[in-house]
Length: 334
Image 1 (cartoon, rainbow, N blue to C red):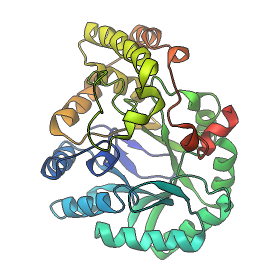
Image 2: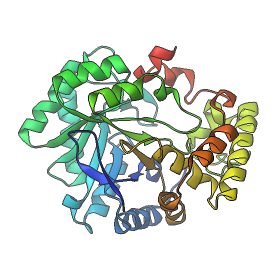
Image 3: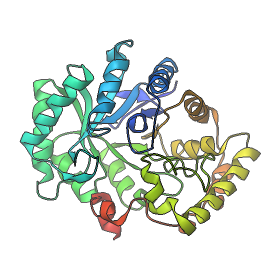
Image 4: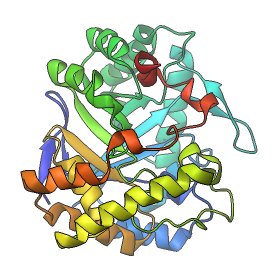
């Protein structure tokens, strides 16, 4: 497994990370035994970066990872946790809480659910508009000093917020959606990260399965799968976006790769300061994603992929309007 240093001040991690949200939440029913087996297979393959959030399944995901950690050497893994999102008993999002006292409270619960004495990268999941980012990051910095957190990250923050946060404490990475059909970060945010020596962990590299080669017009109909209501996954938008996925498939197959592998390899090709996160919750999907690390894209391959999936042809926003309003990372483009 190739490894990369996450930002100038961060830990060394695997070139591909495992995003665990789908094992507990958002993508419909999941299989607990298969999720644990997938976690084991990822670690055995050399994946060291494990990403979760304390609000994934309202704590369920952390408890699941805590169970999985019992059979692995914890210090070989880099555990990244997002925090701050508020949800009600049926899972509806209520907003975000970045107050220092709340951050410390959330951290205490995460440590207990994970069964660990520290978290490697701790990050606010979104910007709380009522709390200065300096206060939120300052609280996490205090937890770094106390030994409960090793590094500080950000998630879905815009350039101005990133700069303000970096003045308070070292920031190792920004977690943000980045894929062939979500390229807004390239204009301003990615240059800011590189100027400041901050890495990126890219989630949604398959756009939640939309450009994986496995999604169809009938997918996501059963269970509590939020993709059934997401703008890119409905009606004419879905039909248009699946045409892009088919164009990508044609290019990928001509290069001896699957659609998903080409999409992941494209993100990985954007720089050694970017670590793609794959949301695999089955071993076969994990194996396919790991195969992307063997795909070597030449300049002409990259050009063909980008021609097949022109960003201006993407239909729909990446979240519903209410959720988009919470993204500090999108405000510069609105």
